[in-house]
Image 1 (cartoon, rainbow, N blue to C red):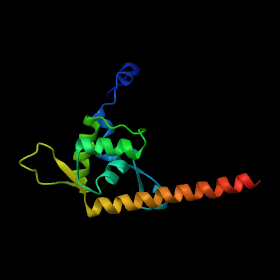
Image 2 (image 1 turned 60 degrees about the vertical axis):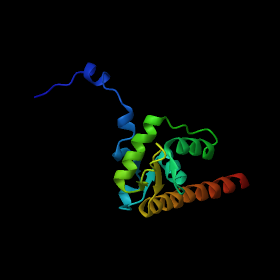
Image 3 (image 1 turned 90 degrees about the vertical axis):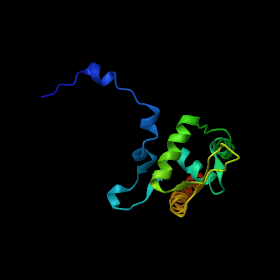
Image 4 (image 1 turned 180 degrees about the vertical axis):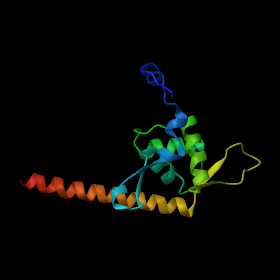
Length: 140
């Protein structure tokens, strides 16, 4: 039998790799209903939005910052971990490298567009429900 002490638990740390792990890119939502719909992390949502046109890593970082009005800032290590995971999932593709440039560009795939559309619909539902309740509450 293996015994784990409190000291072992306290020494546990979470790395950037843990945060960008493929299993954590989508958080389960509505599992009790059996629906397949899942929520994207905010960073992944903005990365996918950014790749509706081909972009390289630095361009993605800039675009995400612009779209979020500076609220979401992606570090290079986090971004490239997420990009690798998104390529593995088939949600984005790395474009063939241009021999005249060192920059690798990425673009969203049809699968990524479907995931993005599903997330947009989920977020819209959240906003619509919130608006309806907030408007109703203000009337009281």
